[in-house]
Image (cartoon, rainbow, N blue to C red; front, side, top):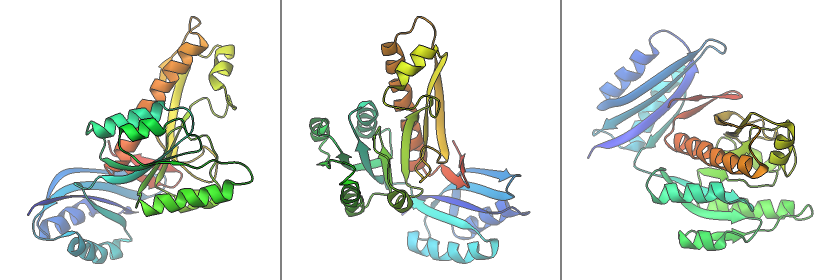
Length: 282
């Protein structure tokens, strides 16, 4: 039976790495279907993503052989079967545009994820979750209960086997402890006005200043608030005729699209961490 895989790797750059990787796959019955690589001159690191089909070995056998191959090259690597959607949990507060967009794309077969639960500090979207047959968990958060609430959230994330956590306009700052536990597998979306326009009504501030561009940024969650490695960004034009409502609607559209692209690329194993940056093999 033929199985398709994605192999991601990074290591110190040296001559012959592409040849070595392709040779390894050929020796083990791998037929390369897609490949991309990048050499970062600033860090001296080599990054590669290879999608291939294989009939001779299963995931376990390939992983064992890859471990031996990678060691002398000092490679960090991961191997994933492409037919397996990424188990995902979504966190949301009271703005549902990103949640609604992700749910629709998922059910339409446009995202290779398996949304297993929605967690919210409000009850607003329990009916939306029910319409997609996704379990909805209401976990209120206050300053006094934050630690207990995060413990419940993490318990659900782990119980669902979530490999990806999406903060789809979840308006709570995660603790350093939870950020550490979710390192490399939690994606957040925010408007690109940060840090210029902070607070609950950034589009009002932007309108007051007469901005000409609005946008959104999707990034991995880290303990440094909104400073994690960026996956995707986009902008939309604005002018003097736009109302606050116009800016808000355009901003929400941009946020939804940027987050969906980030989730898709992450789920297709196209994003590799490069320190405080990312390499995205689109």
